[in-house]
Amino acid sequence: MSKRIHRIALTQQENEYLCSYITTGVHSARSIKRAQILLLANRNKSDPQIATQLGVCKATVYNIRRQYCAEGLQAALNEKPRPGAPSKLTGRGEARFSAIACSAPPLGRQRWTVRLLADKLVELELVDAISPATVGALLKKTRSNPGRSANGASAKSTAYS
Image (cartoon, rainbow, N blue to C red; front, side):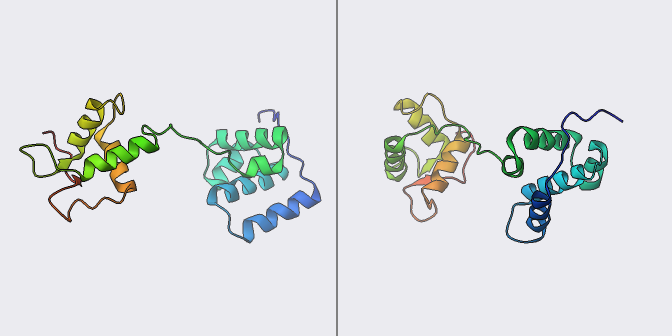
């Protein structure tokens, strides 16, 4: 059996809190799983035993133990926010994008496609590069309904033109 660097020794109050945490209230499945890991670790179960019993990987068990020892109970239960990638367009860029999508399509076209819109955004130097999938997500965000009229963007068509 491997030596456990991060030993879990819950107080009676923490133990009761975790027991009620997993049975009552509205908590995410991930945070409930984390609470279960801490409770089993407190009962001197090994990482492989906990991982097998709860259906998680051993690294997850190790990370929860480490986080509890370093930052405390609430940090171990709750994830830190993940910021994600910054938006490609600013507020003004999105407004300009909406105006382009609602304008008349280029000559020879019946409607805007996501590929045409992506190319137009690059041409107008609103962005350095943007994928048609990102343009489709922007259309969805603005609740564009391409099927309503001949003008407007079509999120359905992603074929190469």
